[in-house]
Every structure is written in C-alpha cells, then in structure tokens.
Length: 319
Figure 1 (tube, rainbow, N blue to C red):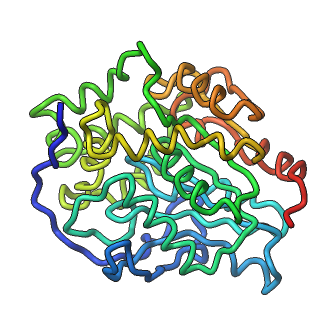
Figure 2: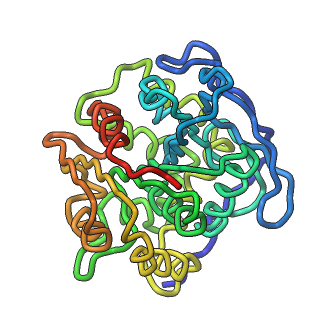
Figure 3: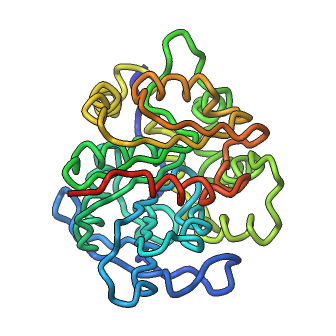
C-alpha cells in the first residue's frame, strides 16, 4: 500500500514563544532559532535551551532532547529543570509542531533528521552530545546521531522504535489512526489523537499539564503536522519513508561503541516490549531500565533525570 499525503488545508504561521504560566516551564529557556532547511528555505524553530543558566562557562556537554508526536519540547521540562551541573540541555520543537513555524509542505523522516541538524548547527552545538528521545523522536535523533558520529557521546531512548518487528501486528492505535477516512478527522480536524496520547500517562496528568501539552495545538491548522507524522509512519516497503527508516535501523551497528541508556514504560499500547527487544538486539550495549507500571509517557510517569544524571557520570571522557 502506497502512502499518500494527508489532504489538508495548510496554513503557514510564524514561530512564537509559548504563553507564560505553563507549569514547569521556565520562560528563560525559550528562544527562536533561524536556519535554512535542506532545501535552503529559511525556517524558524522554537527551542528550549538552558545555556543562559551556565553563566558563560563552556558546557560539559549537551543533552539534545527530541520529542515525538503529538507532544512538543514541553515533554522535556523535567530534564531542563534537573539538568546535571555544567550540562547544556536543548529541546527542539519540530517544524509544524509545538511553537515552531508552520510550513506549507509535507515533511518526511529524512527532512526531520535534516531539520535537527540545521538547528544544532545554528545553535553552534559541536559536542559532546547525548541525544535524548521519545516516540518518533527516537528515529529522528538516531538519524542525527549517525550523521554526527564525531559529536556523539551517548544515546538515551524512551519508548520508541526503528522497525516493525517481523510477525508483529501494527499497534492498534496507529492502525486505527491510519484507517482511511479516520486520519484527518482524528489528528487534524479534532484533537482526538492528541487527547488520546495524553491519556496514555499511567499516572493521570493534572489538568494544567494537559492544557500545556495542548497549548500549541488549539486549532486544526495548528495540528496539520500531527496528521503528517502519523501519515509518515512507514508500514510497508512502498512507503516514501520506508527506505530512510530501514537504512537507519540497519546502520545502528555503527553506534556499537556508543553508550546507550533505554528508559522504558512497559505498559505502553504503542511501543510495547517487543520494540524494546528489537532495539536491544540492535544496540546490545544498552543499559536498560524498565519502569513497571509506566506507560507511553514514561517521561511524565517517572523521574527520568534521576536515572539520566548518574548515567552521564559513567560516560568515557570525550576526546
């Protein structure tokens, strides 16, 4: 089955800063970053960045945090708030997501990987870098890692995937969202997909936290990229992003000497333990923490910085 672009009226809109008062979000972290995309088109991303809190000192390293769909950089607020001493933390909103620019084009996985490289170059991030990712941010961050191997010091993955394990069914929530006639209605015209994702937190999110996650996606024209992300999941070899993801998954052996930490919520109806096993097969050097009772939004269900910060101290010195 060949995927076709989601037919949706696309409305461009500039990047913006988040509204004040979002719980756990320090306004000093927010900034707008301008850079050309792979096609040379000037774009503007919203990022969260704690660089100003380092007082002008050179960072020990950078935690590059990459969200998935349909969240935004707000997902990483606890990592920014509990940043290890001397470390810079940067969390990027993908184009069309969060408070980054809304564009009039469909962005594939390869575009997203290129976008992330454009942002890190604009921010003058040179390494050492530890990528931290969730959901489809996992594939995007690993694509960046493979392209920036000389800067890479480590990889942190939470509930994500790079391949559909052989003989395993497509997760029910994804299969339902991809049903013809359902995709646009559930992801763009209504916030059904967004609200459903927020309900995947095993510890129910407080109302003000749910409102913060919804803040960038108040109207249908602000949610177009949510539908695009779902539409860009490559479920068959004919899909335009299948080759990109397949090459990425096959290439993870190049990271065999890179420290990896996997932080997993096993009560996840989307990325279950079969995806964890697939990732362990590809990155067998990984340290794995399974948080029993945690689900898809493991970043909200558990205190992940409590695992990330001490793990960083075990990394070998970066040359």
